[in-house]
Length: 390
Image (cartoon, rainbow, N blue to C red; front, side, top):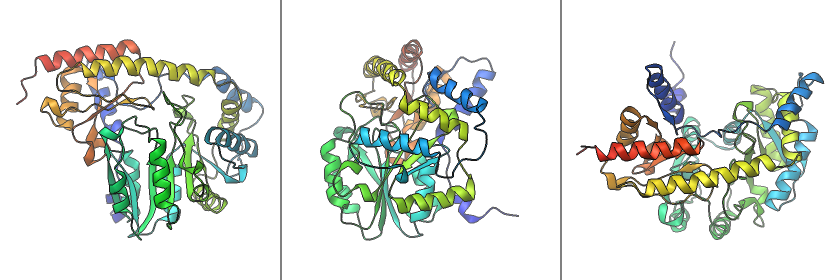
């Protein structure tokens, strides 16, 4: 019995492969600094945990409506309306088990074989994986370091065609930490507003930014009805293991996502949804403290990277990643990432884990302690000082 041909077109996520290698080295007694996984190193705020415990005690252990509990959908609608400056209601919300279903389900509902999907490269690897899986044509747009890792707008305009059925945006961005400038968002909206396509706006890092709040393309006139906002609880509230995301979209898309949810998951876990209500409606002090600490780490770690020979690191405007340019070292991205893991005990990711235009870069997660980040800089510095590569 052979697997279906489409299984040959589905990819994986490099961070988990590197994590597995790092764990194997630790089992051999090595000390590894983990900067490969994009996961907040903070605990889920206590009031959210307590809400989940209370929900279990109150019997929230049964099925919920497939699109989500009405009270959670209302809380999400209120949160999105406030943070994006738009007006949406609970009927525009679909709650799903994690952020990735809100990539997969809309694409499955909208994309036919042969359609074109434009997406950022480097970018979250699941975008390209799902495009290929569905038999569509991936159209990567390289992100430009000099533009804060935003699109070259002229190239984007050239790549749009009658076959383009979806444009994927991600701001703040994984892996670069870039935030698409508001002027670029407005220019992109002008390009696509009258086209027969949907925008999947991945805003999972929406609350982790260090300067001006990122502008959602859904807030631009004429774009709300052609935008799917992806967001969730994993990053903002340090709830990665809780597996709860959501999408905000036109009602006809909610209906399509609901059908796919019925056929795959039935519903998102009910007691975690109750915790989600607490996350959105209670004070946001935990998120504010987390972002402040990420800023402290960002400033120190990027300064450290910029002190290394052959490294050049732009200062990220959001998320919790550093994405230094390492072309000055003479190493390829994958070879240097491998060497840092094996010889320096620093786990990071090659930029090529996020697409071919990631060559020449590494991704470091700053979701580790300040002390570990500073130790990582020293380890990399010592490695480079003794490097005989080339």
